[in-house]
Image (tube, rainbow, N blue to C red):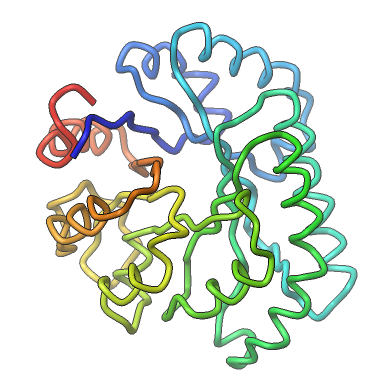
Length: 260
């Protein structure tokens, strides 16, 4: 597999504190923007930090807020709040120009009583507006699997919108926890749509965000399947501890080469 730049998920407040560390290790941040960040006064600071990253030869992506946001909600007022939050992200993206923006679909078969049609109908009242804005900026929205036990609902939404500015973020840790289908089947269904992957490990019981090899995910299979894609995939690690960041940097050269 060709040498690939690595991105690391970093909440915006931590990014401000540890910017020099990211630059030192040549790590491209995936900047998580919480609702509190979006309502805060640091938007000009964010643009400045993104400019500093670019001047250092690094790239960056965004991760949109997701807590309590349900783009497919049957409640139009909730969908209105979702649109407001996503438009806030896009306002920042217009200034900073991230390479990609990770978003969540909000689908959970338990909450929607497996009513994919209801979720899809309501979702299509939210996403097209945001996808159009992504197209104007020249970025891609990467829709992440979370509670999805099958890739089919996500595929239906991606197919319905059918835009090069909307792809899939395959989170291998969430796949391990919730998927009822094999990794091969998931890639057969959505592989061509994968714009980004989230890399972290677990043992199938909790979303532990461990470094690869500290859980039981078959990363040899994962990277082999990725290697069969022609996509220009963004590789993002999601450590929740600094020591896990360092372990990721030790382990990943096995799969991505020594000069990532």
